[in-house]
Length: 258
Image (cartoon, rainbow, N blue to C red; front, top):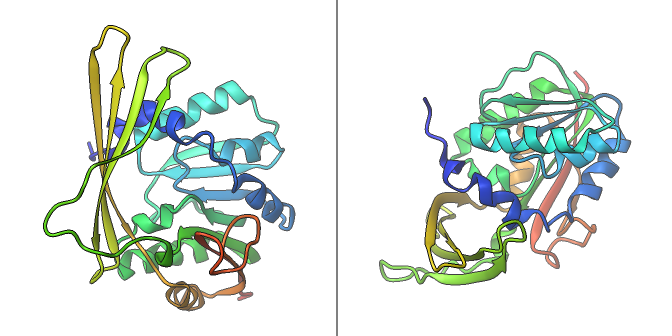
């Protein structure tokens, strides 16, 4: 069985990120502009895909993490969406669904988990095979200009991000993070620690390690052009903020006709 990096924090993922929904309306507006179903790469727990299906769109979501797909299926069951939704365990660099989609998108910095140009190109090649001529591709990543690239001397401070109360259990949950940037490769290694503290003082710790690659707007434009995807819009955030003002790089592209 393949290693599932999210298995240690799957039960905490929605608790940590469900409050974030700035991008859902953005992708819904793009979905209104195309014919045909939608495809999300890296669907995770369905944070974006399920609201889109609730709005009546037919959505397919792929993810490499079985534990996150379990969470997504539970979300689908609870939501009873109007649109059809299909969840598939697959890698975004090698998937083959044997059909095309009007909108393909990669939300919430998921594209940054592709750490090499080869992986990025492989993903976009699969996108080109799965998107309808004239269809839309969109991706959102964090701008490299918004993070510190100053390297610590072989160590990284562990910082408290937040402390919250779990409404279901009344446990206190603390999220801590250590970041190790590598300017030479434009990557950052992140170690997340979630401490769940029960009323009796017991502590249960979950550790999640990941690595993200940052790309410039120019790099992403070239990669998309290489894959036959013509960039039409670039934003700095999901409210259509200009690049350089928002924290993100959000690129929207059209698939060229054959």
